[in-house]
Length: 138
Image (tube, rainbow, N blue to C red; front, top):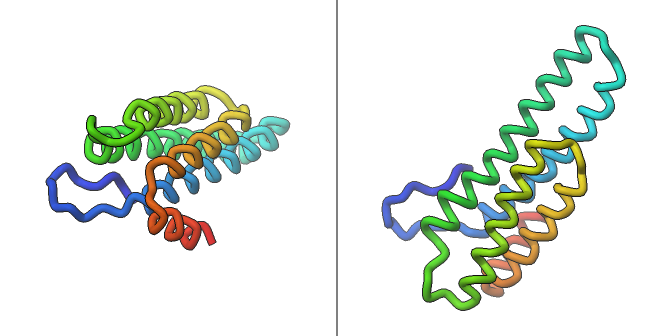
């Protein structure tokens, strides 16, 4: 699932996008684990796999940045929203955390990203959206 187009059609599913961000952080964490493991070997096959996991980590961190920037920041968060500044601050912190996931293989950034998206979900989603997100996380 990619960020929705910028045509104002009114078809949105915020919980699915939040779940996608959570899944991206899970993939980044798995990639980091594999990078650590494969870095111990220097054979050609391990080097090949190591490169693939690095690319996977980079892609999923970039996907998080795209969802935040192109979906939430440009389409969903409005200046007259309640908790506007808090929502913007959390989204900016998620963007920086995704960048840190690209730059490092430190899983503390995955934990931080998951904590931030949970905090954002709590103030952004209504009760129906929260229940739907719980179902998706199932």
